[in-house]
Image 1 (cartoon, rainbow, N blue to C red):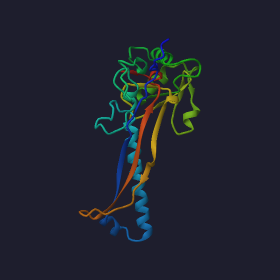
Image 2 (cartoon, rainbow, N blue to C red):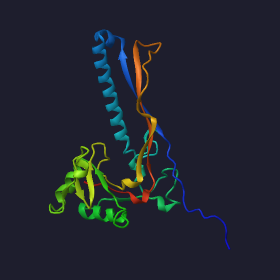
Image 3 (cartoon, one colour):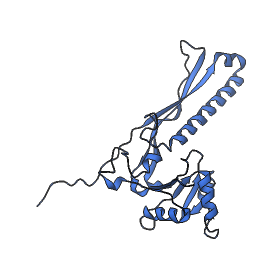
Image 4 (cartoon, rainbow, N blue to C red):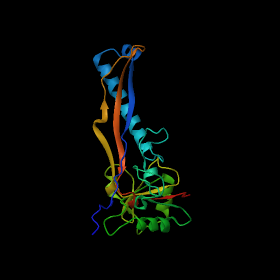
Length: 240
């Protein structure tokens, strides 16, 4: 009897990435805004602006197509997560084929091809993509070609501020940062944006550098976008 252990799983590992956006109050700003109320209003405005910058940066990096992004220090985005090749989470799909996502090039029939790829990564009645993400141009193209009797406006995403419609039971949304010509099928059950509890838009104390007349703080975020089932994700590229 063979009693040796079987290697039936491989753990994906994701490096956390840290972001820092500065909040700067110059000495000139402070003298131009005398009084506690004026300073507090200016401070709140600068922090809100920095948080918006950080939010925009994270959103853009969600679509990174390489591990660590262009600088090697950013999020591993869905561009590399949802791919049939390339090492992701430390696992190479060339040797571990179960780790490959589905990626195909668009041909001519958007409704038929999206349906085919949706079904390709679905398993049973409940394990299937629940979110489609694309550009506004592709969103409008798909919206226009779906039979109006089958096209339903999704209230699920509308409740959190996204315009969306239903396609094959999933909510379809568009994002200005999404890669041009790409439609992503996301099974969000397996995707998590994980973050450190002490670095989730945390604000550091203000300090004055020795060589600058300014008080500087930073808005910090540290975390990783992870996926535990790459084969349940898909994308169609080159849609025009």
